[in-house]
Image (tube, rainbow, N blue to C red; front, side):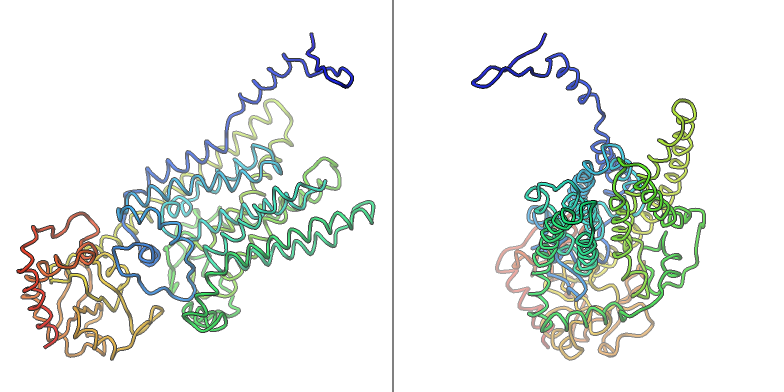
Amino acid sequence: MTVTVTGAGPRLPAVPARARRRERKRRSRRAPWLGLVATGFAALQLALVVGRFGLGWDETVYVSQADPRVPAAYFSAPRSRGISHLLAPVLAVTDSTTVLRIALATASAAGLYAAFRVWRPLLGRTVPAVAALAFATLWVTVLYGPQAMPNLWVALTAVAAVGWFLRATAPPEPALARVLPGLALAVALATLFRFSDGLWLGLALLAACAATGARRGRDRDRGRVHSFRTAVPSAAAVLGGLALGSAEWLVEAYVRWGGPGARLAASSATEGGIHPHWNAPTALRGLNGPLLCRPCAVHLTRPTHTLWWLALPLLAALACTLAALAARTAPRAPRPAVTVLPVLCAAALSVPYLLLLDYFAPRFLLPAYALLSLPVAGLAARTVAAVRPGLPRRLAALALAALFAAHLTAQYAELRTHVTAARATARRYQLAADRLHALGARAPCLITGEHAPPIAYYAGCASANVSGNNRDTTAPALRRRATEEPVAALTAADRPPHYARTWPAHPLPGTGLTAYGPPQAEWAEWAGLSAVASSSHGVAAACARSRRAAVNGAEPPSLSRARSASHRIWSIWAR
């Protein structure tokens, strides 16, 4: 029995209702693999990372830009503000590190789904899910998923950008109005999160546009017209995304540094000098940590855990070779660009970290890992499909599953190591802040010297430095400021900084640091009065409290007593 549609035209037979019901049931039985991977990624972060440690050094810099409760730390030239904008809605409500990490874990899982979902029309349902699984189970991905750092977000937006680009340039001629906004938005977000990475991604995509424009089909005239209609709008979308994403960086460059050239020069100085430099040996030693290898004098540890990283470029090259061969022998095979372009973009995003810098951090290669997971997942699917159906194919799938299980074991071991190290570092920052609180450090105050930005964030103080990568003041300015508010200079050396040679020392037990304060500061008396004085500074009191919970939460005295204490403290510091 068939269902017919009547109208002004001829009677046309419709699809049988039973066949439609069978098709709907078949589609509903398909497992949402990518959604399951994203959910598992969120669960891994919540179980293994969230709540395990506080904010790290770079995190405190990014968080302080959007947290209204603490002074903003110095924002150096290489940084971009995208991650601070992402954090702003959460920080407007709470300063809880746990809530912030839960929000980031949820957002990164949603971003993982959205980024790899773009590839479903290109690779089907299974391969993007396998690629997302491979990327989401790396220790560095799980560790940085709930952290306030930009690298993972650059990785996800790069995956989305390359996918949208391939869909925009795919024959037959696509509906550009649906894909070009996605391409422009993905490039803009990548550039907003990290300006330099966005530029390298944009250059790779523009080179792909040029290659697409030079491509010819079987019909030369038709191929030329099709290439023009896809390459030019795609290039415009990439350029538009770069312009939109870099607008804030450029405005800040003119306001703070005098122009993009001056900011790039300052970025190079902050990074230790950006110049051609073969950094691959340093990267090899630092693939599995430490989290920042600068200077990188460590030796390669646990070489077996490095096998995955060494095999990754080889597997990607093999996938490209097989894709090119399949395009010649199998007309229905995916075009080689679907495999080759992610590899080329991964290589472009790795250039500054392998060829221009002289230090390394494992998070630097997150965008490359995310892009390379796609051809590697396609290679795994191709390998299983090439085996004869039945028992041989099941055995091949089991062999790949066993390799993946061994890979997960190594990743979990590395994750535990780095979570423990991050916890120890955050506790050291918190302990130093607590010691300063015990000495009487209350907002408004200033911390300078070693580890000043994170310790100042935990203590609710401002931070400044007269030297190093975060230099933003001078010694005379620092000494003048010490006559107006409490200042503590931190050092791990046996002697004070040159601007604090006459300042008395105050060891901070358990931190390896010593705080030097101005000689006018009567720390004992100030410690007993500053809590009273801080009650007259509403926001300052919130900034001064410890990051743990309600440290020094004494009952406020009367307003007249607070005003009297404030006058006494300022007279002590101004003497």
